[in-house]
Image 1 (cartoon, one colour):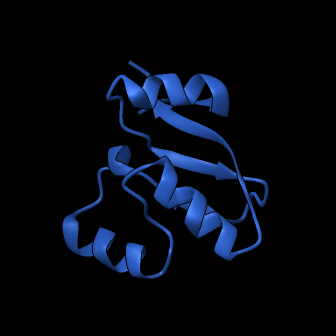
Image 2 (tube, rainbow, N blue to C red):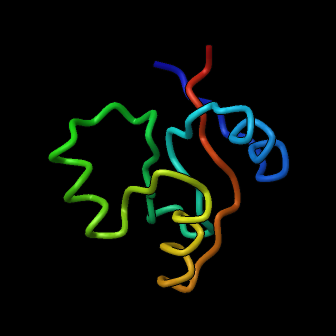
Image 3 (cartoon, rainbow, N blue to C red):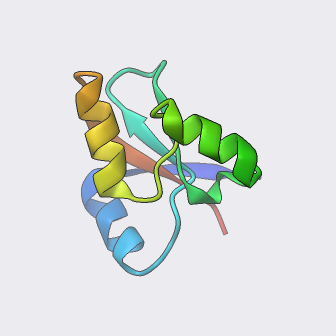
Length: 80
């Protein structure tokens, strides 16, 4: 699988068109917030979500990042 990082402005257009995020990039490269395209099973995603490491969309990911005093800087998408 190949993923590409897209800046936030361009990523918002892709999200609005229904393309799922693989990962939400933050200013802290050690903080990974995965998105729906990551492909992990539902049990694992449920655990990651309770830990603030999985988000269904940009608003949820931004809230998770803010709780850790961070911001979303870009979004990774699966390259098609």
